[in-house]
Length: 458
Image (tube, rainbow, N blue to C red; front, side):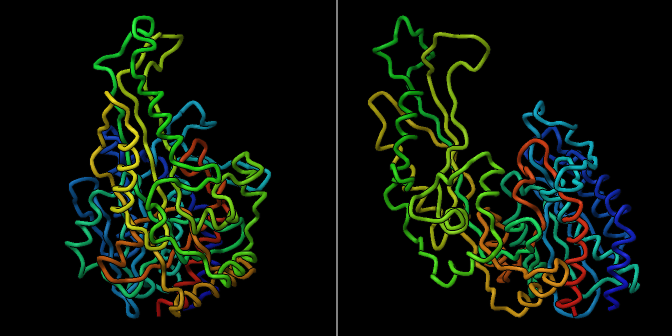
């Protein structure tokens, strides 16, 4: 493979590559909202067309939800599966966007040029880095690099309800020597990073029911049970004053980080001050006794994602609500068992119910354990060297605070390891208004994948 020629092709074709990315970003593939079902399907069709134009044998695969995109090349060498997702988060609150979320544009910022738009970073921009690397390789060499499987999901942002059945039903076709996942971020801007671990995830939602109906606070204020007051007590009981989760059994399966790993993290390029400033904070507010990186990568959490009840409109309404609602997510590490945590969390809540109150749970929402990768595999060192060459600094193997269940499912269902390499930054606002993706990240992401494929796809 004439690597330098491929890199030159990438550089000269960057504007065209961004034009193609903009086409994909314009498609409103919000998987969680049924109103966008057709457009989510349109995004999948767009990707199939692009992959076919590059010589992949690509097609849509139906599921009970949004379709999967599966594509194969016919080259020799180790079989590598690349995973990404083409669906995006909802855009609410729309009024906080400075530009229309599905009208992508280039913006000059004090830190360089960025692409604005929903999905620019998570995950359309990232998955297109791999596809564009394949495009450049094909343009120079007349064929695609190696023996590739591309697997693109359309429900990652809505809990992946079709994923496990699809993997189980297509195990032989998808099982590869190694999975490549581009849905993560760099530990700090300009520091290429390979994720060695991911936190798991558990979701819960419950409703606390009190009075039979909403009550007039003049007639019933005092004697009535107020669900908002009671749910607030329960929420306050989840943590102690040191930020530790106070649910019995919550820390079963949690392991301390080895000393040598902690030392390696100290030199990985993480800038705590910058990280906190991006979120408008000056100090970390998590579990005392652990560094910011440990809190983010190696400690479990219990977070309140939504809390509501009663009158939400303008002005005042003197009501005691009949019910109050709470959404929770837990990030899991080590050997924590989602089923055990769910049971412990529910027991904690139900033990604190007052007389005349009851709880209903929103079914068994999704949960997945943490993922730990086998970073001793030679492909990890080959990729680390390729990234170091491209970014002109040593690439690092890090933990990741986010949860990508596909890494766990690739291991548990298909029996294969995954290598997670992403080029996003922590300030990309991936689930927030004004999402961005640095043009530099997009450009160097394409070049990085070309270098990685040059080393491991032979």
